[in-house]
Image 1: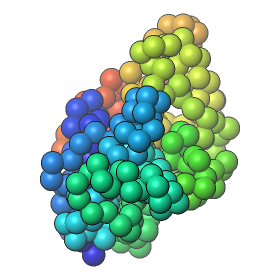
Image 2: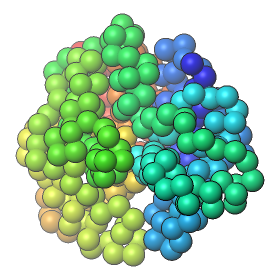
Image 3: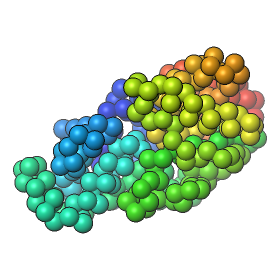
Length: 290
């Protein structure tokens, strides 16, 4: 199967750790992906609220490039990007008038036939749990890990068609493959505040604070995510939330690819874990002592 890779803007900038760790574990897994040439922003967080046709055309262009390149499937690690790509594909499959407009604007054919995978679908369905489990060289036994899905991976259900939209478990299953203990809690799919981070930070500190303190209450050592925006709010805002509520949190936020990489025995520096705001030193020390 020819696998196309759509990094999106975040993995090339503020969430570079996600891409670094992804490419590192794929190297270990001996899986090849090809970055889509001349890709453009999917329009997440802005275009869909300004111009509907544009919000579909932007992600559709990336899909069309991959489809015309002979790729059967595309990996979009960013939850927001995968959401926009899947939304565009869905709309073009169900609205012939919109499809004609968008395809004409693209200047290239597009049949809307290419499969789109978010990171969890890719790891579980394309790579496969058996292969992942076979690569675990450093079992993370005793480590308590909370999986935070956020809202973009699972909603809207009719488009995303991924896991249970109210109680997803796929990331927990991946965590369990590493030997770590998945932590159950109440805010798995609650919004972290998303793009309000700059325009309405009080909303973000409240929503993200609820998530972090609930996870802390349930005894987690760290949190894993598959969304750059969620990672940013949970990681970058954490100290601000601690100051606001006067209660220490101290929870490292890792991408699921980083956690898998640690269980594969990859050096933390090669996974760019030192690039996060909340240091993972205590967790890394605990892993080293396992």
